[in-house]
Image (cartoon, rainbow, N blue to C red; front, side):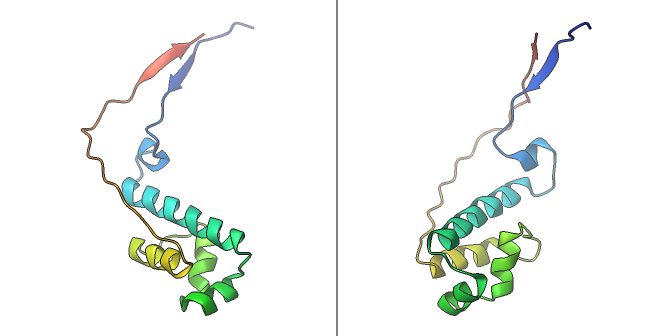
Length: 107
């Protein structure tokens, strides 16, 4: 069997952008915020119902976050959820010019 070189494509750090998904940056931000919410829920051993009583935010929103369903949840809502769980969000913005994707052959 002849080994053919594989094409290696270095990712951008945003999988949504790598696959040309619309609103890639917003989706990436939502995924990062959701991961922090899930970490806080797990650390405090909170069910979605307990999180609702603690924050006043609907248990359904916490369920959607756990199921990675962000279609009906805004970035602002995710930030409110994090704040309600006792954490704070700090956002840093870096503006870069778009770069071409890099590809290299690997033997």
